[in-house]
Image (cartoon, rainbow, N blue to C red; front, top):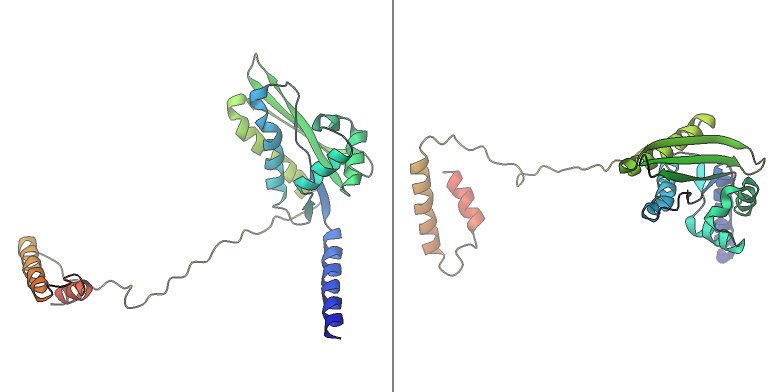
Length: 229
């Protein structure tokens, strides 16, 4: 009987969690295509995608498709990332992922001007309509900033269009308990440093003589007693 009740509670919790998640917009972000085929810029294909995911996960009301699930669907459909140029294929992949929106795009490099342009679009999986398109462009030395910039633009689109709020950052609370051991004693001002140092070494020598086996055993007590004189 207890096992049946426990199973029912687990099932109920799972159902509530599933219902809560269905209220979220489900978004899949693909890798970005390297249109210019410049090998030294291949890192941006994954980098842009990661930057977008990082920004979108800050929003309440969005559920992001996991990378492993996305790759599995692409493999099942025998598609490469370059195949997502066609919006009909984008819709097909999106429906397979049960996504509401697909974020796709690519980037191109101009060797004459050394400029990189990133194009991104958000496709409504149900209708196939492009609901947002963003572009950023700058010199290749600012490649990292370009990735962050396109990600910020897409985050702001979802935030504005669907009235989404950003998740509050949880800052660690550091509490320090003040005990008598952590409070430094108030020392009298030292006016004659030579006399002070001389007195310190004389007392330390006497203390060492009185503790020949382990002079440092009561070192803390010696320091405490010395400054309380």
